[in-house]
Image 1 (cartoon, rainbow, N blue to C red):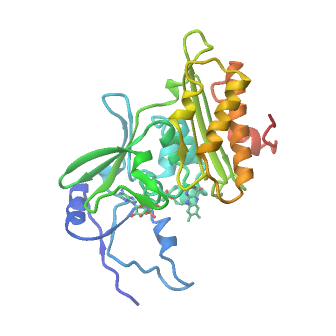
Image 2 (cartoon, protein in one colour):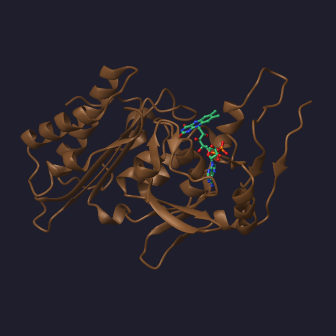
Image 3 (cartoon, rainbow, N blue to C red):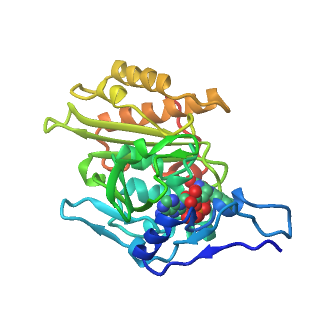
Length: 305
Ligand SMILES: Cc1cc2nc3c(=O)[nH]c(=O)nc-3n(C[C@H](O)[C@H](O)[C@H](O)COP(=O)(O)OP(=O)(O)OC[C@H]3O[C@@H](n4cnc5c(N)ncnc54)[C@H](O)[C@@H]3O)c2cc1C
């Protein structure tokens, strides 16, 4: 049996000190790492470098609001912990609550989901939408980077050798918007990697007609999660009309670049944008325009048009 060196720090300080002098692989829930390093049945995974287990560091397990009212989610918080904590913004809770199956959600962490930099990862969609930042710490200091910049491209992140992700800071919540939307298209309710996930949010001016803020992001539609402020600006300052909706749809169509099942992913994205904006313009009673249950538990298809 191969020997594997494993560090098990008890505090963040200890973990950062190890990271500063040893080239280790941080392991949180291990749900990506154990799969990416698996061998044949009966053989344990092999890691090319020592592993540092960080899943139980107490400093990475907190969820709180900071002095600016931003939601700070510890890097080691699991999907289950996030899904059940109402301090976490609605879009993030939705994504966390639909990841994998229950067992996976009890181990998969938010930092692992970001650091894995998969375009199909569920939490980056809401995190891009809400301008979330990652807090990166080393023995030399702290820096914060937008999640959308931290994920550079497929499987590539802006993490320095001595750093760990310690927190995810989300400056917006559902309270900042009049209507919100999150929808994951998967083959099952649970344990399904997304075919596509779309997050949206809109806020109107006091007149209830002019759009003050609109955001849309989509996962599984390119080499990383997609969002474009230029496309969103096509709507901001205007009233929702079918022409403007079609302009946003056409603009977002240019931004996404799905490789597998491109027409399905493009058409699903178009429909979800069209549905959200046309419903928001009607000022429905419910703030949440789309829910998972509406389409999948009742077995209803995604509406056309
Ligand atoms: C059966 C199954 C189903 C899945 N379903 C989904 C799904 O529906 N949706 C989805 O998005 N994903 C899914 N995944 C992928 C995976 O579970 C998630 O990406 C998960 O969030 C990874 O978190 P983890 O803590 O397990 O990461 P780990 O495997 O521990 O680590 C992943 C990467 O992150 C790095 N890392 C972890 N923490 C830190 C940190 N604090 N600082 C720096 N680097 C860090 C690690 O070094 C590694 O490179 C699934 C995986 C499996 C096996």
